[in-house]
Image 1 (tube, rainbow, N blue to C red):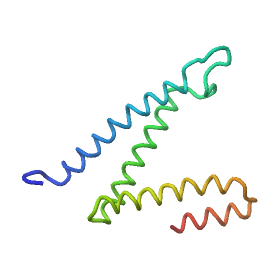
Image 2 (tube, rainbow, N blue to C red; image 1 turned 180 degrees about the horizontal axis):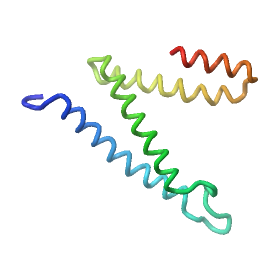
Image 3 (spheres, rainbow, N blue to C red; image 1 turned 30 degrees about the vertical axis):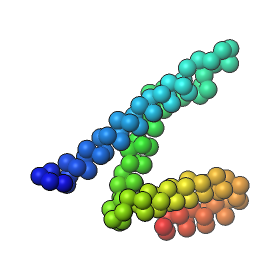
Length: 115
């Protein structure tokens, strides 16, 4: 960018995405922690602050991961596709790992660590 330091440029994108996702996390936390009818909240045994902090740390890690993937590609489309593929592969694979036996889970997790 013309006359703008690279670090300021990256920081501006980080803050922009963080503010957008912070609003989403706030609404998500609010919806999960509001008492609904006689049954109570959707998540009864988790304090809303703890849930908010956990989700906040998750979005910070996701933004940082997206930035890391973005540095390997010059085109935004490729970096997005690779980011989406890796994110869905890693997080989708944990749903698969629930159905495995313990020794299979250990081997599965060791292969993920090797990535």
